[in-house]
Length: 261
Image (cartoon, rainbow, N blue to C red; front, side, top):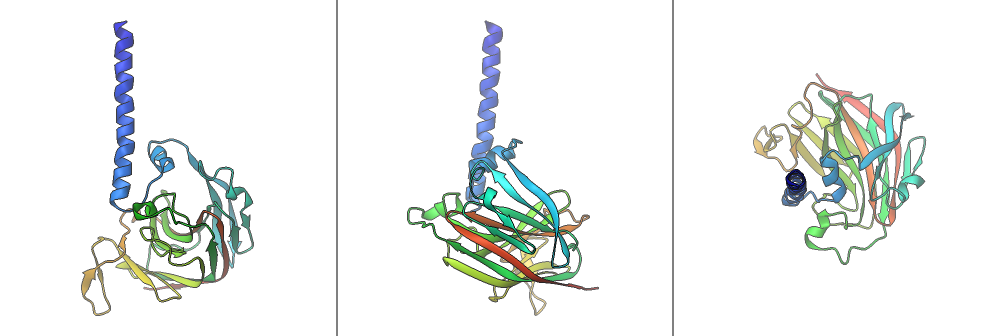
């Protein structure tokens, strides 16, 4: 009997630790405005609740990409099965998450990569009942391209979104969108992301400061890329997330790469 009681106490302690960790993850994500969902919390504990499906390599406009889609509890039997990969991109319907990595360009050096393409999409769902911090949760509906940096160890740094909103902590600014170009430049001191509308955001190694055109250090409005392994290759990720009724369509037309000494 005492042995059973002891085992019961141990199991209760383990359960408290697990749920305490999940609660900590929720509080941490909400504090920094990144949003939270249960899938991410469970995955943080090592559970296999989301995975990449249909992973394979393709050649788009003369460059090698790895493409796939993200299979999660939320989207398992919805839009992902209807994603259509094409010769230079994809068409992704409601509730879908296509993923890609530009494999043959190393962004961990002084380089400038310009992607000329149609980044098109629409969100038909409304967010009338989702206000306040709900904007940062999975209840909020949006359609957007996510621009990432990925290292070879699997570390990832989100850099920019192109879509119905411009930031994951702000609400939608438009129902439809059609960007035609974005550029990623590693100057050796910072990484600058810009698009054809003139919007620009920068990321530095130390998070707090960047150097402006006058050579003066100023507060960085972007963030840091310190989580990326400095001794590994960095790849450019172009993903899409349609969270609601809508679509996103990618048609890459040209990739221009410039290297600097």
